[in-house]
Image (cartoon, rainbow, N blue to C red; front, top):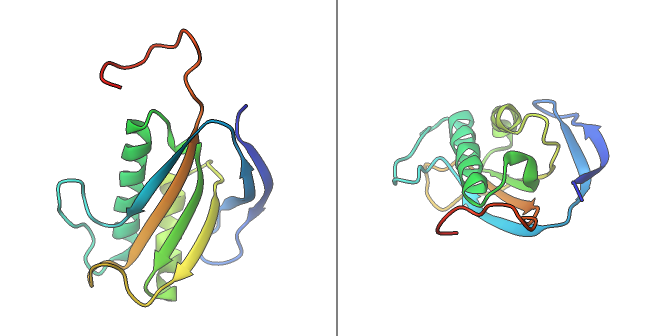
Amino acid sequence: MPKQLIQKYMTRHGAQAIYSRAVRARGDFVFFQGQTGMTFDGGFVGKGDPFAQADQACRNIKALVEEAGGTLGDVCKITVYVTDVSYRPAVYSAINAIFEDVHQCSTGVVVSALAHPDMLVEIEAMAVIEPEQPGQRQEPGN
């Protein structure tokens, strides 16, 4: 069963995009650790720049969902943490550029701090990836 988007709506605040109030999906759940401006090799992108940090976080999520065998279209839910409400337009602009036409559910939370003082944004995600059907080829080592 493909994803069913329930009550799609246009956001009213910050960068405008279409999200869903709920998503129904069947398949393998994949939960992603919160992603930030940290790169997988330990570097950090976007000191002082919430857009750059959100962009890196989204690129990390894209790489991880692909490594899990899915696409960004399989992401059903994100939770976005920012350390200042004024960062929301920049952060959601970055998210909307990467998650174009996905229409996932999204919750935004303003927090007093994240794990490192340079971190301004953290994005957590959940995806549902359809299991392989009989006869589909599985990559070696998976």
